[in-house]
Structure formats: C-alpha cells, structure tokens
Image (cartoon, rainbow, N blue to C red):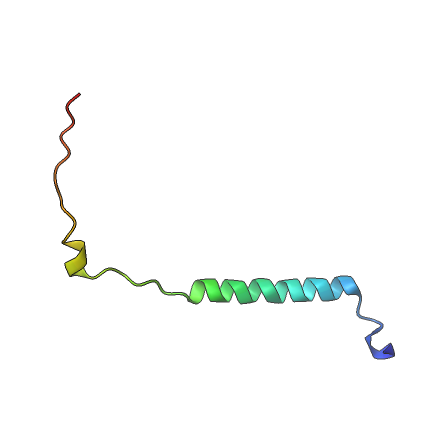
Length: 53
C-alpha cells in the first residue's frame, strides 16, 4: 500500500509500545485493594515481645 509508505517500522514500534505501557499503567493504578475491616485487625494479638538475652 503506497499510503503506508511514510510510516516507518520504528515509529510503529514506538507507538504500539507506548500504547502498551499506557494501558498497563492505567490498569495498575486503577486497581483498588480491599482494606481489612476494623474487626479483623483487632483479632491480631498484641503480645509484648520480651527478649531474654
């Protein structure tokens, strides 16, 4: 196709690489992890650590 002649392979590779990076970054930063509830955090035992050297 003569219409595609001005676009070089390097420019296409850079374009698709930037689109891939942008897509991955948007997916990474749009993920919201579940925070533990207050009742679950109280189940952790708070025993003092007494080191006997």
